[in-house]
Image (cartoon, rainbow, N blue to C red; front, side, top):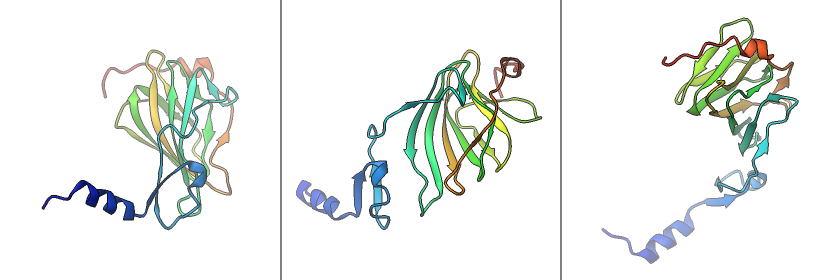
Length: 169
């Protein structure tokens, strides 16, 4: 059976889905909501918390229904976060490029598209690009008492420079 264009439009109009901005996500939590691409401004990663050029593209804020926020974070070659922890943990899903991550006291690891990194609550760590390749990851971060990160000291050039770039997993 083929639906006519008018029937498709009428069916679509009855679906409980609304296009919205992130600020309006709590307006009607009982229905599916779509945040349109391009409606949230990108921001530079603050120099107090990042070394090098970093861009943060927010996707969703933490809320009552799901207490996690999400964002794409892009690190230019050589850019990295400061050491930090998360009170409820964080997932990183690498979407492009090649990056690095390290938990305090453990070896640095190379991460690539499709890799998923779990940063447990309270684990001191950092992440960023390699010295020659940019890296983008999707960050999904838990929130406790309105806070999702505890920033610490910057990763020194000496700490960062200890990595050995691996060509393959």
